[in-house]
Length: 205
Picture 1 (cartoon, rainbow, N blue to C red):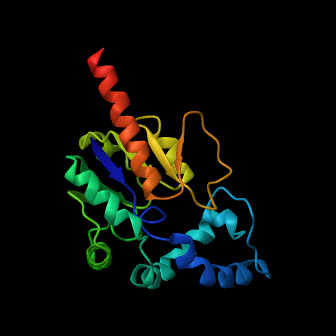
Picture 2 (picture 1 turned 60 degrees about the horizontal axis):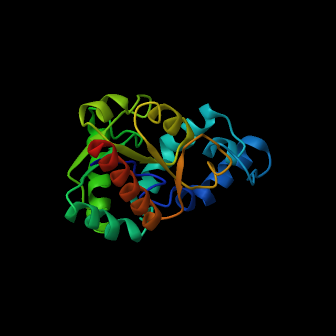
Picture 3 (picture 1 turned 60 degrees about the vertical axis):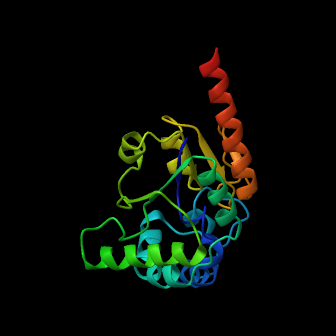
């Protein structure tokens, strides 16, 4: 199988990486700190508008990119999937990374350095602009399943291939028929194996 993987919120602890500074930003914009129990995006979680979310990440993404912690389990299960013959294809819309500019090159270097440090194996990596869809790459690379955490991405991608939603505070209330959810990479791995078995059953009919 060709497995598509997002980075932020799937391989990295996105919320932990931005929470402290985003609360300060929320207070600046709202006059008080907003941090909701239930939300459908990071912006909603901290009580800011989508345009304010873009404003926050335009600057803070550089600090986040250098300090964010990668989850421990992806290294193990991604390598296991690789050994089993699956292809691991990272597709990220990380801010600036998809730009053909000095900032774009700088961000790509930070991303690849972080992945190497975390021991994350991948066969290919693609950088899409944060304002563009991942669908063209998903189609070109014949992705069989995609792992993402952001609702807007999940909604769009699931129209083309099965999606595994990596559970986060900003997506836990979202409901979609047939959507697979995972709390960690052990559960991601199980979903992928189940999908593989389902595909084999269809082929053998």
